Length: 333
Ligand code: KG4
Ligand code: ZN
Image (tube, rainbow, N blue to C red; front, side, top):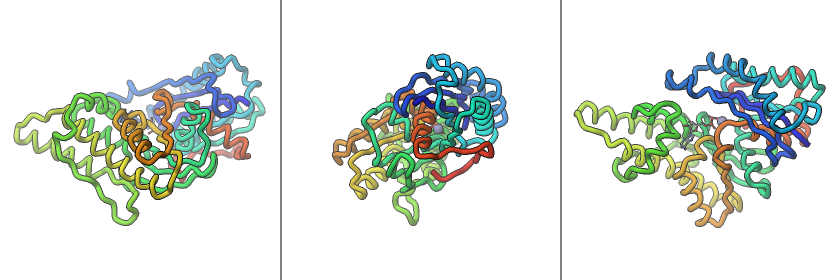
């Protein structure tokens, strides 16, 4: 069964054709990052306009690359939440028009469920249940994936997301948006013990995250060094900061894994591309005996193959929508 996936929740216009939720026949991603870079972040109005311009070519490109006609497709799956509302609406309305004209079912997909499903593309044998660390530019969750369409948030961030924490610290160090990627590269050549950073704490739920204190500590360090006219060693700060964020994530995730006795663990979202995070999760897997699944790098960031993969499972579980489908900037998983 072929599913056409469409993704426009942030700054990537993407479409893909995936067979039976697992085999990627095509995955086209048109990134707007270069255009947003000069503003230091995604400008929502620009994102919506660029999606509108790109979407027709991206969707027909995905069908062409898969060697498929729209009549070969069984359903159109589209990200409808969460994300930038204007950006989401471009994908949702395009998907509605396509589904209506080709007389196909329309399947709404939650963006984070899609990120988690990226693991199904890379690991044919992976099936729920598993525990997943979901770390993107907008979210940091520990998710209990009980079944393909039964997901529970075990822990969440109280403020910034992990990706946002990386991007904001990177920006303060003069690294262009989205700085998380570059910070990770620079950190490889730095000393992670060079700068002391606090270990954040959250009152109440011990597994929840908070990144604002860590980010502020890095900014204070930079500002006081500037005031004193001291040089900051950027690779060392990148390495120290990366270690603080990653150890914090893996510490909480490790506790959740041990408490739940999960036999399978996974990661998802843009930050799951982080080199140190991947290494630390491998160590956690060895230590707990839980089998680890990580998405291939090309499916860590936003793409539509992951939306088509989750769309397949939503569709076979009867989760379709009518032409009244709306988009939502926020929604529980
Ligand atoms: O999942 P994603 O592509 O978009 C959202 O749904 O938000 O995640 C983007 C985030 C950005 O904050 C970016 O800096 C971060 O993922 N990111 C990384 C790495 N690659 C992407 N953060 C740390 N290390 C990386 N290697
Ligand atoms: Zn994403």
